[in-house]
Length: 302
Ligand SMILES: Cc1cc2nc3c(=O)[nH]c(=O)nc-3n(C[C@H](O)[C@H](O)[C@H](O)COP(=O)(O)OP(=O)(O)OC[C@H]3O[C@@H](n4cnc5c(N)ncnc54)[C@H](O)[C@@H]3O)c2cc1C
Image: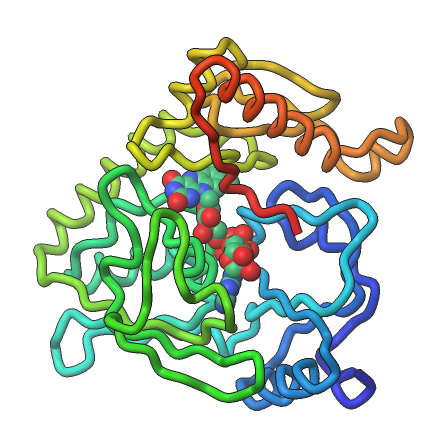
């Protein structure tokens, strides 16, 4: 990795890069400054069989306490965080993978481009939300995609049109490479109407999710038939259940909130990541036992 030392660090604690602020280290952490740096790194890792992962805002991932091998790449530098909107007056907007979803939505609304404003409040980057096909019960980011530029793991680049990408429920076929940027085809709308709708959606979301708790993650996906995970968790009386430092939120039972950080934990010797894993397992077991439904975690444990 010597040749990449200007943008790579070793043994980096990923707690600093995940929303929950817990978890172990990764062997190498890269923050490339340009596309060419990223591509050479990917080619190198491919030739040397180094496992590669990408992280956005880390809202949907946690890392085991004993750490992970390989490299984690963050596209948080300006080269990956540009937005280009309304070229030729058409409702197209192109955003780098490192752009926060909130920035993308705000820019679209400001330009009078509608469609994605209902997704306001979902934390994440363009890369993360596309990979997860993040959304609400009736809308998801994938449906607005026109094309996506992806760096393949061998260091080559492909531009995929929407027909070449599969978006499933909280999943996509984009999880095999590094998303570089995406173009969205939106709808022309009235700026003040779109702003009002965005604000309304934001207020509704804030009232439904534990936003006052910074250290929170969404735990499960809804079922394939659309039953919400929070309804199921309440049905089996697990709202508010706590294991160690991890607790099922009182406000919305599909969220896990944690109360201590890694340093506090060093004093007690307790692993918050283990607490979270055990809580997820408890919910899955109880729901399977009582309802015969297999609830799928949305949180990715690396
Ligand atoms: C309070 C809260 C509320 C939430 N509400 C919702 C909701 O309403 N609906 C919903 O769908 N989700 C929700 N989530 C989950 C989360 O917002 C989404 O999963 C989001 O997609 C995470 O984006 P991220 O940038 O943080 O991705 P990360 O968590 O960093 O990564 C998620 C996945 O994306 C991959 N990835 C990230 N960047 C790239 C890239 N450039 N190229 C390829 N792969 C990449 C990662 O490898 C990982 O597999 C919520 C989470 C929280 C904490």
